[in-house]
Image 1 (tube, rainbow, N blue to C red):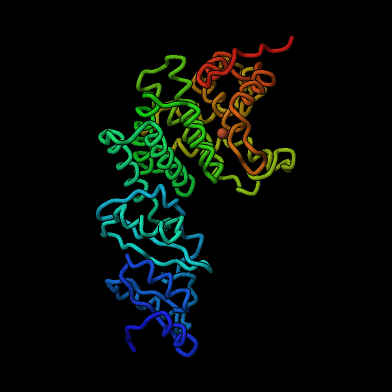
Image 2 (image 1 turned 120 degrees about the horizontal axis):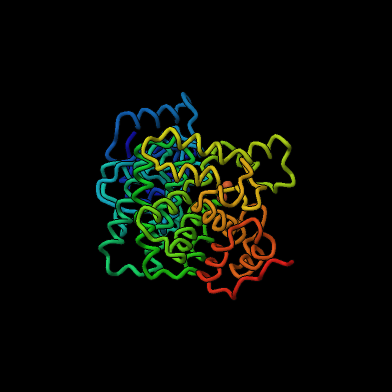
Amino acid sequence: MIADVGTSEIKKLAGTVTVLLLTGSSDLNATLEAYEAGVAGFIAKPVRKDELIDVLSSCLGLTTPASDDGLRDVDFVRINLEEFVVGDQISYDVYIRLTGSKYVKIAHRGENLSSERLETYRTRDVHFLYVQKTDLKKYVAHAAEVASERIRSDPSLNAKGRASLVRHTGEIIVEQLFAENIDEESYSNAKKFVETTVSTLTQDVNALTLLSLLSSHADFVYAHCVAVSFVGTLLARQVEWTSPPNLFKVAMGGLLHDIGLKEVDIAVLSKPRSEYTADEARLYDSHGLRGRDILSTMPNIPTDIIQIVMQHHEDCSGNGTPFGLKRDRIHPLARLLSVADVFCELILKNPNHDGIPPSDAIERMNQLHRGSLDGTFLDALALVFKVAPAVKKAS
Ligand SMILES: [Fe+2]
Ligand SMILES: [Fe+2]
């Protein structure tokens, strides 16, 4: 039976028959109300045969999907509504998540998704949108394109707005690189991001404003990689290593430096090193080499970037991993990124600790790591964050 009914009728009907909602995809208010009233499924207009069959199969008990498309939590990537990049003729479907891990498609691929439409969702207390993991690459490509275009040509965008846009793009790029094998397309998205980062961070960005943006993100691994890329770029600028190839390698090396961690279980990454088993410690310590192996399959990645990734846990005193190289044998850009890496580890919150203020982090690095980190970049870090001159190593 097809009927045009209100929520009170849905409530009455839902107790006796299965009610499906046929809805325009932008009509979110009606969708949410109908869901609360007890509808069993949603069919977005225009109706597609495969979706109709999926929903009917689900309602008739022929399948037991968690969403109208048979998709579950693990199939989706969550994106903050505030940061979601809108556009014309999007090349991916967009969903919202209802209670009970139920997902409703609110925009079909090929549709225009406007900021006005997102605004209506925001007024309904929707905080996140979702795209399928298999579509993430398309969303990333679109977001990277929009970010670089806006940064180039939108005069209303201030320094904070630019940094925020670049941060969002960076995090979803890293998320995609962790979720899938790196290939030409994902590398070219990362390349576009890096070029935008470099141009943004060599303008009038305030380092502390940038850090406050970075620390607001929940996923600590992705946020860390983007932060190392940003801080590394600021360090390179401070020491005047500002040739375009150098800046590119620093920003890309920062983004990719922990790519080898994609082979380490998140449960291991979420606990302190002191609780690692011997096998877990070995696995963790091999992430530089694993990163090298992952990137070596890409023909167009500069060798320096592979070296940076492999050596970012080497230590100037010769006690680092994987090879125990001493200062002069470590790639200079790896020494630079090691400083950015330790700094970002200290300032950003993760499951093992709350982040500490940049000035405390710099003081601690000077006290504890002056012998293992390169002093040139430690001093540059203090200058970037306008912290008092370095505390010299105790004799
Ligand atoms: Fe690392
Ligand atoms: Fe790291």
